[in-house]
Amino acid sequence: MGGWTVMSRGESRGKAGVQERLASLTSWDADWSGLRVLVTGIGVSGFAAADTLIELGACVVVIDGSVTERTQAQADTLRIVGALDVLLGPEAVQSLPLIDGELPDLVVTSPGWRPDQAVLAAAARKDIPVWGDVELAWRVRTRRGKKTADWLAVTGTNGKTTTVGMAESMLRAAGLKAVAVGNVGKPVLDAIREPVEYDVFVVELSSFQLHWAESLSPIASVVLNVAEDHVDWHGSYASYLADKAKIYHNTQKAAVYNAEQIETERMVEEADVIEGCRAIGFTTTTPAISMVGVVEGLLVDRAFIAERRDHAAELASIKDLGRTAPRHMVANALAAAALVRAYGVEPVAVREGLRAYLPGDHRIQSVATVDGVEWINDSKATNPHAASASLAAFESVVWIAGGLSKGVTYDELVAGNSKRLKAVVLIGVDSSELAAALARHAANVPVIPVEAGQTGEDRPDGALIMARAVELAAEAAGAGDTVLMAPAAASMDQFASYAQRGEAFVDAVRNLVEGRAQSKE
Image: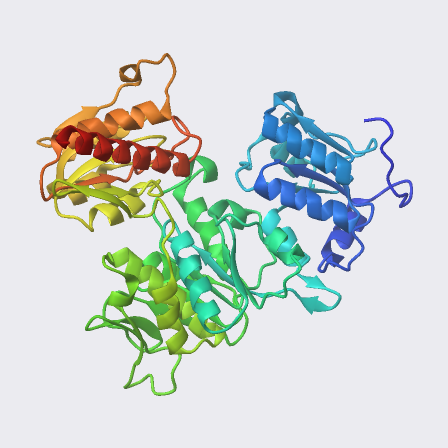
């Protein structure tokens, strides 16, 4: 660590002085030079934060607990562009590092880092502010006196990525330069630094990102839905809800809520919004005044028209969402429509945006139909709420489920969908909680576990596990059934990500299809 140089700002930096300086950092053009910043995590968000801070002139040190080819390459890049140091390995994340002999002025953390992680807990004890990458992005959004883009903010337990994608498509149909950023994949900091003059960012925000954000003031915001999730990270469901609710704080024009879920309405009622901000509901049934909803197969608006007391404006048809439009997909479309209508987008662009929208992989993705059996990949269903929405779209299901539970329970999920289940194929290193719920609420449904040993390997191999799960599901399914891979759990026990899990399912189904085709030749 010797050799680090930091611009001198006096022999001592009192806490009051540091706090005053941090409070002044509200634009790209503010004085960031010499600010001692520790960045925790060197993944997509952490790398973007570190790279941005270096460009701003801060003194940056980065830490990450993993030592892989990827993290080492990221570390080399950050050192080249000006990071003071990058510390990798388990020992690097056990305590606060000193920067030129002093504690950091600020910690900028990657979203996945829990508040009780050793470094973040130490920062809290030392009264060192902790920001997330989204908080940093909000503060640097103004450059040379001009905002980079307006923000429309989206959170919820499920449906975030679909909703931001739909909103992005609607905005583009209106002729606006819009991009989906945040938890969706592209860090908002990267979008801010792109040589593109965007009009709008549609920002997907996880509960983790919201936990570390305080200053956001979006044009419009929405909590799509809430259900028990990430309790292990937040410590309690109440804390999870409190972090989700932060998205409404300082919303400028429209705080959009799910009229079919009272928790989101209460969040709006309790939010400290900008004066003049309206509460706008969305519902998959007939909308009341100041809502968007559905009437006779049409998506309609009774919120953003002058004659809303006795009229509704047609936005689109449910058929514009594609061949299959389960209820939660309609809800996502309505939420996206409410956001863009708050921004001033005309109804015709809502319709054209929905028609142009292409759903992402791993979200109720139809993979194949073989011998009357439809195979559906919904690997993105990483919690019970998402899996329940998937199950509700089908009548007779062979369900592939299981994985890392994240501290949630499965009784409500199983009890509410037991009549749809023909059989359940269990994956996951430990799916005992799901198995127990099935025993309690679906005792007559066959449960077929895929044991790690069945792969023929000493360690779990995701591709082999999924191939075996698909084989077992094929044996259980018949014409008219749907094989649905909607795990209701995270993937990291057997896969690198939900995307890898989904890809393994798609590959296994395609191999099954090819094998059957060859056997008929």
